[in-house]
Image 1 (spheres, helix red, strand yellow):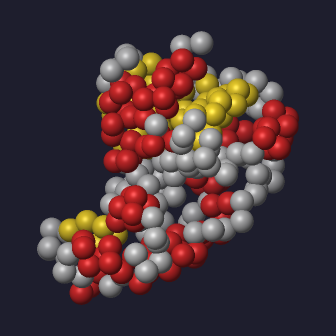
Image 2 (tube, rainbow, N blue to C red):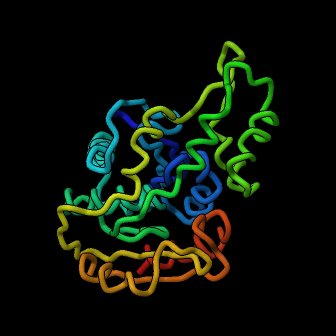
Image 3 (cartoon, helix red, strand yellow):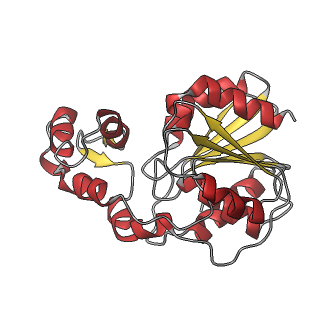
Length: 255
């Protein structure tokens, strides 16, 4: 699958993989901040997200293969790879399946473990929006608010709605497939291999995704892992604390 991507800057390649319901567009500001320090930043859209192709098939195995295909197609030598949430799990699967294809990894607020599905209310809310008869985005937000109370989360999710050339509203995500396969997002790792390269696990102090008790399991699979906490940040570390996030990334890459 040929993934859509946005490239910013020139220099050592850094790849960014977004989380579920996200896209490369969410990473524009972060990409620019990193690129200004002399890096070529490639922000990718995962399959069934953003402007990448849609497919009935959806799994971490396939997304790891998509990432490998992207690296080979663009002849990227030993890139640094950043992945947030779903993107972080994709990076971990990729790292185990395709050793020697990267120099360093940065995993943002996700651990190599099973997470119970907790996106049900989001899926319900998104599916409740009648795009065919939608007049404006405000109507969509009013409807989604019945399921998603957080304003910032609603705005993030509604970035997936766009106007087609015909003036109709449509989704940037493959909502039917994500609705069907959402349980896979929290899936565990079944074929674990040790990854010896340097890995930075960035977590938000206000997030519940990486607990202290997860660290031994992280260190077992990623023995050279560093776990760093960004104070005051929740799960969307890069959006809530962008300056601190970029500083942590740049310091780690330059080590």
